[in-house]
Length: 162
Image 1 (cartoon, helix red, strand yellow):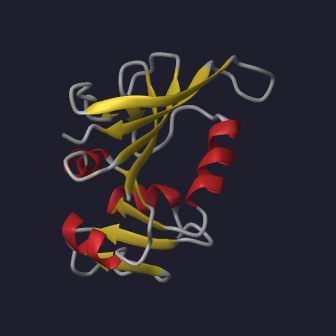
Image 2 (tube, rainbow, N blue to C red):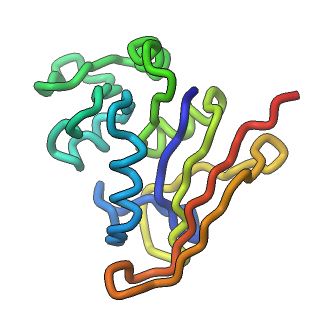
């Protein structure tokens, strides 16, 4: 199974200047629990925004830069190579960025999204979700609290198989 996992704002914003815009500890905790023990695929810029490999996961970085080779990561040069490198994992996660998400939408099985119920200014966007192809299968809604500044929802979409 190939799952795109992301936190996105009302206007599909993912981030700005290669950084997350908001801080939602509940989302970060859920992300860690969900992806630990699995392969995670990300683009070079996403990896660089993290600054190091995510612990207890196989980090696969997609880049066109043949000189890019961070320690603790598997480096590949296409999404197909990344998916092939993760084939032993029964649930691989795509972490972004925008170009990787766009390419992966066609081959993904699941979208595991955190919707941040606020509109932010950003320069990186999650692709539009085509509801003819994707069906919402679960949703948990949460109100802002003392730790999480914004209302948010955890939403799962599964690809409709015809």
